[in-house]
Image 1 (cartoon, rainbow, N blue to C red):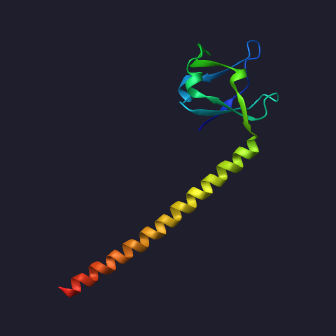
Image 2 (tube, rainbow, N blue to C red):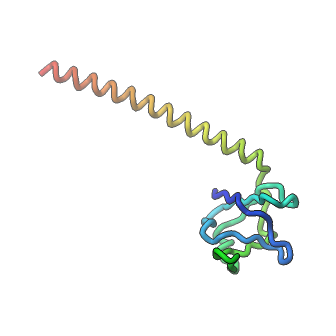
Image 3 (cartoon, rainbow, N blue to C red):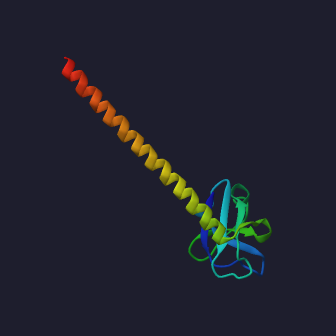
Length: 120
């Protein structure tokens, strides 16, 4: 999932949100608004579908005009942070365990190589 967290607020007069074309990926994209109390959650939309939307320029970049109706509530910002922290913790534990296992295997390999040298 791709998380886009720097959108200020939707464009209310035509009920779209402008998202930079380079930020959208195929599959699920998550979006949060930093300045819009009307949209306090993190919302999900399909990237492949969003890429079919018309584009416009904000003066600097090319933007997709994604209808607000396409945004589906995903979770609160606090829930997302907890999920993200939990995943990072799991990945860190797996990497730490793998490093310990690898070090043990390398130590055993060094021991075996020393033992074989002594045999010769």
